[in-house]
Length: 114
Length: 113
Image (cartoon, rainbow over all chains, first blue to last red):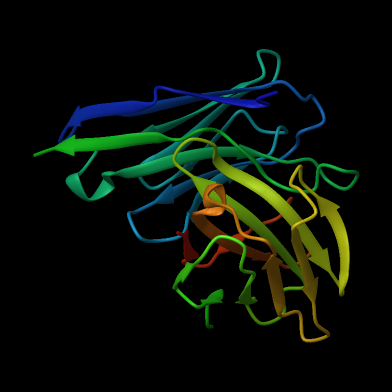
């Protein structure tokens, strides 16, 4: 059972464009939603995270939009740059209980063309 | 502040052997989680340790085990290696648990031949 579904699997965007990656979750107990960026040969790096008490969080060119009723959240990368080319993972977790670990989406490979 | 350190970076083992991977968390972080990353299955949770106790476990066979020491350093062991165990093994550390910021190491690339 895939608890976090991520789309698209791959994405090609022109430099300066907006990259949008979507995730949907099933478990309503999830209360922490981070996004990770991973370059080849490296471990995932925390990019930005949101909790369900807010609908949007922005850090520089990166924005998370969160829709609690739809159980969806998305990552927007504004003014995408070739250096943003990487694989992006959404994840979710719930505090305490048996779900203290991160549940990851399958990842989106982003290519930003110059 | 040093990041999460995993050793070794690369390993080649033969089927049937066992392997031990090491993870040193960020100073002050007490939670260490392990994940397996493969192209087909993505990132899958193995187990989490906090204060030397396994607090959470993923859906992996008993060949996969781990432990945490009093200084929060952690090791994971895989016995009777199978070809399908070839993967990038990632360690993540958090102050308390993965519900707060979790920082990953660069991983150990295990190849089973």
